[in-house]
Image 1 (cartoon, rainbow, N blue to C red):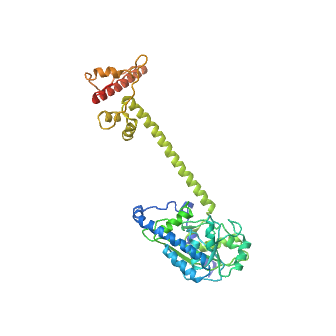
Image 2 (spheres, rainbow, N blue to C red):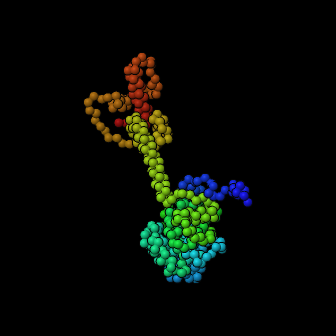
Image 3 (tube, helix red, strand yellow):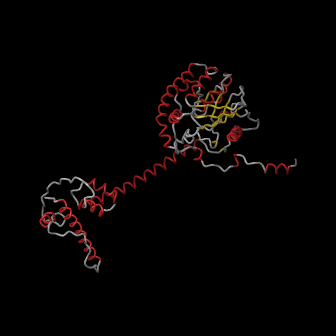
Length: 428
């Protein structure tokens, strides 16, 4: 084949996952645990709670088995796998590319129990670089290798030479994602050991009707993820091993890790992205700030609304002082109008128990706002109450119009008080 034919054949090849546009970082993580099907989940809730409590005890016994039986024991593997099935953790492995000579596994990270699922298939040890309780190290799954963030390469090489039937397991992404894309490999220790590395593709799923129930969310804790795993009927883990690969002579550690990442992404059918664990942490902080801003704006809007409501309630209270303030506030939330609330209270639409007001002796010359009640009581039966407060003429100047407005406002308040007194027969 000529070079032109070769280039033509390459041009007609179907684009792989890397040809797809780069997804945004927020699409790599589930933001909510329960996006829909809330009604069905509520119906399942009683059964799920009972199932979760039973599985807690089974989980404790499973942990005891991992402590008592040797890690490389075949009996231990079968017993733990059966107990994990009861816990709702089902493992399905593609029987290919099994190589007992492989000393290092690297896998994508989709849940907090990925290492447990791989340990069921082949005994492996995970360097404890995550926030995991120290007591779990007793189960021979985790092991500390000097640095908590980047294990010591010398210690890892020594471990490989001393352990014949145990494999080192690494999650180079260093963070859990939803499996729709592969994060950048930031932990490079699996590629610095000068031994063949075998990539393992992990896919986690749930059957209907819990298909949309997220296995892990962006900022969920390991405890919350574990509770939901025990709560759900079952979670299936599909595991596929890729052929083991070795680092080339002229290949750097970064190039080797990138090559393995591309192989793993192709097997998963997703895109290998440049996003890192640090960018995930920044996304968590940004979304947290946005939620705080939305909450703060909502509080400010409620505060402004409450201030306006209190102002209107005080206006109604001036006209109808015997009406409790909480009754006025409750009605104003429905009407949002001072006039409508006054009319509803006067017409008896709003029921209430009148407040008892202490008798206060008037001091000095009585004003139009404090004195009219005594005079109104004398003439309440003879006065025709009207709410028509229109002015007889329109003022020619601003001062006249303001004076007319003030007089009509005073007349409206006095008429409302008169009608209220007539209706309820108040005696002072």
